[in-house]
Length: 162
Image (cartoon, rainbow, N blue to C red; front, top):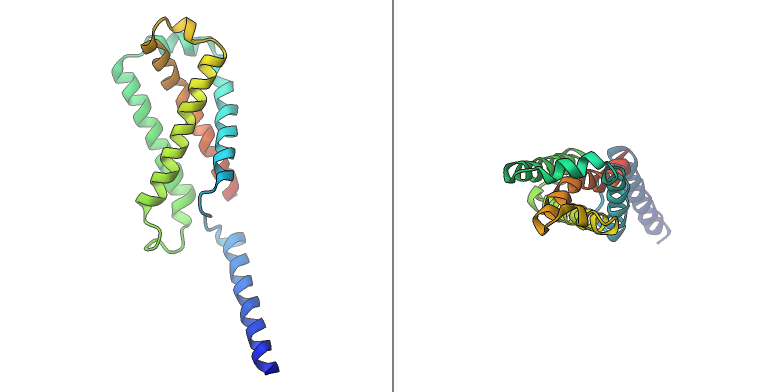
């Protein structure tokens, strides 16, 4: 009876040690939680505020063509995908249980949505929509500001890993 309890306690301690080893040395990514969303909002806001006050950014944004806007969105998606893969998914221990598509989709769409939302908020908060002249002009500014906002949204997960 005593030996069984002792054996059970030893197995429990071994399991806890393995769990600590994974978290401290292997840095296996945790599941995406609401705290990650809050951190992404803060990171997006900090980097977005840095770029939104650049007067040249607004002037340049208004001259962007559809091709430029498409390329900005594409490059932003590629940067986020690389960040999600190399910082997060490359450390997943059981890849057969956590497929990249699922891992990527919830992080990518959440981070990009946050970036667009923060970008749109900053544009309206600081009355840059009046400089745009049209809804399409606002769209151009939002897309231009969303790139640094998306990178800012991804930074907390990078910092969490190191």
